[in-house]
Image (tube, rainbow, N blue to C red; front, top):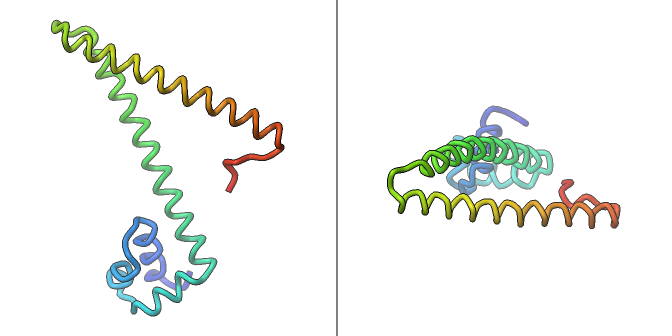
Amino acid sequence: MKCGRDEKLALLLAAGYSVERSAKQSRMAGRTAYRRIEDPVFQQRVRDIRAKMFDRAAARLCHLGMKATRTLEALLDSHSETIKLAAARELLGAMVRLRTITEFEDRLRALERGANVNLFET
């Protein structure tokens, strides 16, 4: 990285802003920004930042998922039969979806082992 402006440019690009907007907010000429995005080291920095952003978002979603699960669990004790039924349906549906995904992941891992490949490596 050349300077703080490059880091800001990488951060904005990783967040999904356009090259033009990222350059402007980084106080950098558009042509300079386009030159930076051609640099493999800079491209890797953008990918690294994006991966960290994704990891943080995924962690937050996991936390919120636990909170949502507790909410559904509490709704199972509602006085309203309609609310109880809706919560039960949602929980059962989530269980089926989770089981489907888990089975798929297990099958994919078995295929990877058989092919001696890890499809999740970058």
